[in-house]
Amino acid sequence: MNLVNSIGTSEFSFTDEPGIFTWELATDKVYADSALANLFGLDPEETLTGLPVIRYLDRIHPGDKPSVAKAISESVITGNPYRCDYRVFNRSGQIVAVAAFGRCFRDEAGNPSQYAGIVFPTNDHGEQDQLSAHCSEALKIARSSGLQATADALEAILKELAKPITSDTVQVH
Image 1 (cartoon, rainbow, N blue to C red):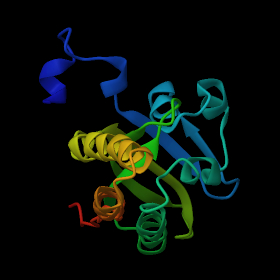
Image 2: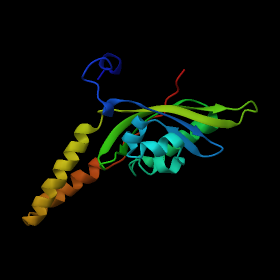
Image 3: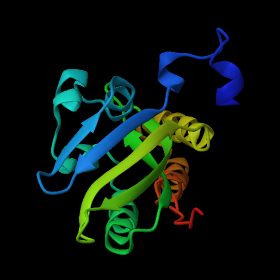
């Protein structure tokens, strides 16, 4: 979806809205708007008043968490902007694919002080998530029907689908 063209139309919904955040490194407080709260399944009142970064990291899919943490850490250390694609769990526990852009800012002494960015939902992995849900249901049916070979095949497919999404780190100039 072209976000710029959709904002003025009825196609744009609150769930499509990008979330904006600022992380004060010294206090480990991440301040975020309600759109980010919704993406990450967090309380919007709490995100407005600040939460520790771990509360956000806890909402990232376990398969994606190491690469996201590494990208953020590298951005803080180097000062380079970052971009990551990963999955988060929304309030209803569903997986939402997102893209995040961020950058660490430094104080006058050159020390990392604030990190700011934007996160928005993507449709990159929606079909894969839907396929996983269908395979999970089929696995339940295969097990309850005693179809062991089918169950084994479905388990192999689900393991493949559960592999981490590769997060890419790119330089933004």
